[in-house]
Image 1 (cartoon, one colour):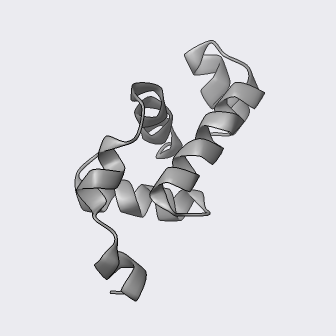
Image 2 (cartoon, one colour):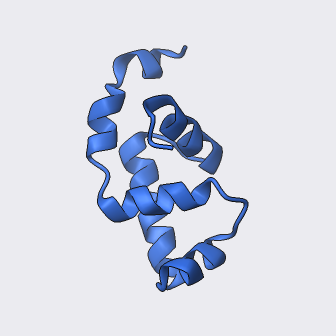
Length: 77
């Protein structure tokens, strides 16, 4: 476990995600592009990209794999 993982309260971070960010996060677990996620959610690719950027920032991660690992660890997926 890294120092970052030991110091950040996972449950508090998860509660800061908006409902839409949680929906986008759940779609990231699929092997799909942002364009495909956007089509499924009836929004533009830029909207999804913005939501992904926001949830990465809130979770303190920088990749899809890290976001999915975080979600698995705190029980979001």
